[in-house]
Figure 1 (spheres, helix red, strand yellow):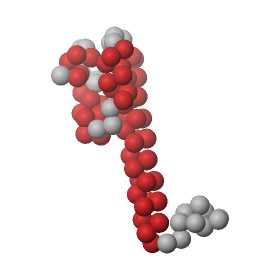
Figure 2 (cartoon, one colour):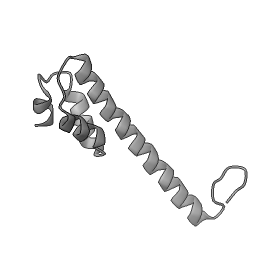
Figure 3 (cartoon, rainbow, N blue to C red):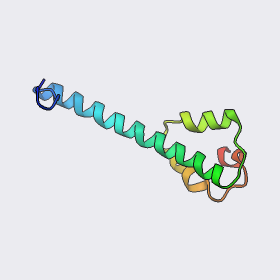
Length: 83
């Protein structure tokens, strides 16, 4: 490991380190978008059950979250969003 950067010095180590960083960034982005879905529902005054809130907040499927984010402005209920 490099003392200055904390990154591994070997090609093998750098490749796996970089993969881990990319995976962490993707998970963080998915979490942020899921929270955005919840904020839009809240701003629109749409009630969110604890179960639906957990389902949305815990989702890590980027495609699913993207679909919810595109639909959240036009649905009338959480049930409609999740259908």
